Amino acid sequence: MVSASPELYCKNFSHLIQASAGSMSLLALFDGMPALTDVPSHPWPHHDQAERDVLLEVLESSSWYNGTKVKEFEESFAAMQDAKYGVACTGGTVALEAACRAAGVGVGDEVITSAYTFIGTCSAILKTGAAIRFVDIDPETNNLDIDQIEDTITSHTKAVMPVHYGGLACDIDRLQAIADKHELVILEDACHSWGAKYKDRGLGSWGLASGFSFQQSKNMTCGDGGIALTNNEAVADAIGCAINQGRSRYDKADPRLRWGSNHRMTEFSAAILLVQLSRMPEHTEIREQNAAMLTRTLSQIPGITPCTRLADATVVSWHVYGARYHEDEWDGLPRDVFRMAIASEGLRMEPGYPEPVYRHGVFQQDWANSEDIRPFPWAGEDWVQDYRALNLPKVERYCKERLGVRQAALLGDEGAMAQACGAIEKVWEQRGELLDAWRAGKIEGWDEEQVKRHKEKGKTQEALTR
Ligand SMILES: Cc1ncc(COP(=O)(O)O)c(C=O)c1O
Image 1 (spheres, protein in one colour):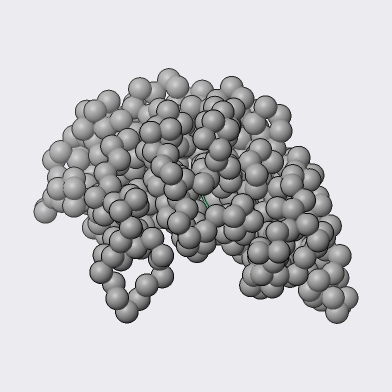
Image 2: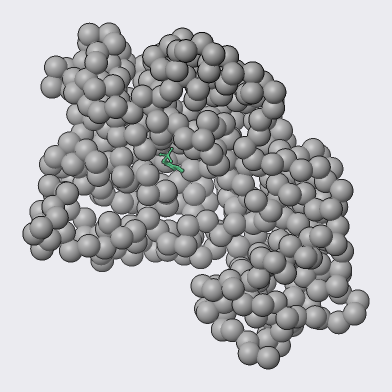
């Protein structure tokens, strides 16, 4: 048998699992029964007759755009997050871009953001013509490291865009103090923060403006959609202009901001979102309870550290439950071998982004010398961070250690979560056997079909493997 090196293994999940650690193994990866059995399925996205009814209602109303549903949704969602104004649009990226534009961010400016985020955070900033300055993260909280922000501020810095990653609030008070001191605005990437709160006030209502996403994987969704929130009427007006061809809602925006494109939300999307919104309180409560059980379990396991939740993060949406895998505590067992074992038990624990966002192709081009394609006005400017040379140590390490449990897997009942927690405990207890098989080269790699067959030994919860 050819055994893959750990490094190769991590990069390539297409090898076959050929391990068998003996006839008495408890691990589902080998001969044991999966820990998750007889658990009802929670497919995502969730919908029922209520979505069907409202879709039909809009269909037959002949008001598919610019009707009452979008307005009702804007008001209801803004109210849930304790913001005065909501402007619905086609996606979280667009919402963030409009928020940046409304804050006056543009050519010659720089926006500070986290190096651990989805590329959409960056696209929103780049589309305004501004440059990005990445800061390292605090691995405990999976959010940007507030201690490092002041050192990264330059004369070009206009805004900070914190990402409340997974719906875990950043330390907004500390961030605001820095922003006030340096006259910066805060634009919150709240794309994971539906229902989440800091000091009992909704995320997305703290900064000058914010953006939320309703793309299909999100805790509430219409397939693709977004909303920008703000408490400032002129900013709301400017955001509205950015997403609706410069049309002003409140006649308050700076005339220089009264232009835009068409990123309007349809009545169909708003109708679905109003139904999804009605489920948020119950779903958020279930995720909070399940996340609490997971945290209690992981706190007993030296090999995995759950994300730290600030005391002021009074409600967390748990879009993804984040944790860190400590390979040394597992005596060198690679994270992805653990992931394979836990998936066989019926619980999917995702690795997150393989690299910090500054490794994305857009940051790897030699823009200073690109003559025929010139999308970025900052290209070649000496004040711009050297993205190609960036190597922020904490985020680099975090990407190798991250484990995540997605929101749909946190929607089961207490029994389902107890089984999921039992699965983690079981793999931890059986780590010696797993390690022996790994070291003996009996585990070659990840094969989705093989994992599926293991799962089928029991009626494993489908949602836990999405
Ligand atoms: C942190 C973060 N920011 C921004 C976005 C962009 O949202 P959308 O895909 O709706 O444009 C996402 C989407 O996944 C995200 O996860």
